[in-house]
Amino acid sequence: MHKYPIGVFDSGFGGLSVLDALQKKLPKEDFIYIADQAFAPYGKRSAEQIMERSHTMSRWLLAKGCKLIVVACNTATTNAIQELRATYTIPFVGIEPAIKPAALGSTTAAIGVLATEGTLSSALFHSTTQDHAKNVRVITQVGHGLVELVEKGLADSQQADTLLKEALAPILVHPIDHLVLGCTHYPFLTTALKRILPSSVQIVDCSAAIARQTERLLEKHELKNKVGGNAHFFTTAPTESSLWKTFGVDLISQVEI
Ligand code: DGL
Image (cartoon, rainbow, N blue to C red; front, side):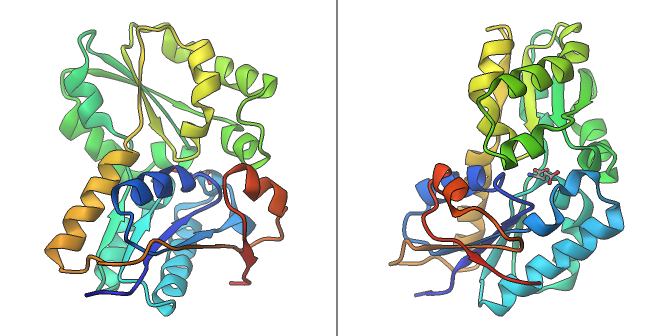
């Protein structure tokens, strides 16, 4: 029987969309969530900075006794997961834009991907696209300002509609039938996205697949909890607890790392 928690990190609120899927799938697990809000957004940072912060988050979670770490951030995964796996002995689960299922499901042979600059410029994103979307046109677009908007608690707002319309315009000139959400902050924009996207476009969010993969790894390494169900939340920046409450988090502690 294992009592150790699962660590989850992101630059901010985005990873909470992944944590939600993890808690639904694994109700007996304990979680420690850390938001690196002092360094958000990651998407505009250099590959070196993203790597350095990913190490800092991982080391802090390891010091808390985590048995497995979920990198609940596409930008950190696509820039750092290979090195994290090579450095630490515990298992890591990452999240990458779900190109493969979208490409497989496309009947128009065109899919859109909305993600951060850091994700779209990574080598891992390019190799995944080449490997899994050979006969499908992949139209990518940086979601400028979207992470900042979610961080301000404005995911369902007029500003969100304006920014999304700008970001989606170059994608929607193509006959896409899937839009891949390549950033864990973007599922919080689903209501606004549905106002803008044609109903023929399916929104692809892979949080549930990440939760299934986490369960598989826990089973493989015999790390599953029999009892538990707690979650503790930390952030690296001064923050408004009222904003966290809108994301369903009642207690948040600040740490300086
Ligand atoms: N939520 C993250 C992602 O999935 C990072 C967003 C950011 O900080 O730019 O990419």
